[in-house]
Length: 136
Image (cartoon, rainbow, N blue to C red):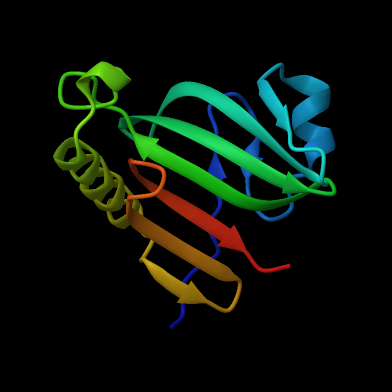
């Protein structure tokens, strides 16, 4: 299946793409950083409005290279308010809205030559979200 590579210009001035390096993120921004101690480092980006919706993003770098992006549409009046308000149905609705956002911005769900775009409900993590995995 032919699909353009996932690339997204963030309002804070960087572009989420395979070419984004951890050095670019860590030297300019002070995002929450979680170093897993095994070469993987996660950065949590504060909620930001992008292309008409509020989204949360997390970026996962391995040895400084972006490998994985996790994201979800945030609608506090429907879901994402707090764990006290959590339900599987609300997380599945979050996944649906995240998928709708992707499609409305020209991205299909599936595996491609450059990587994969996924959207759904992760029962292990208890969350509905989307993700992009870039091939190494």
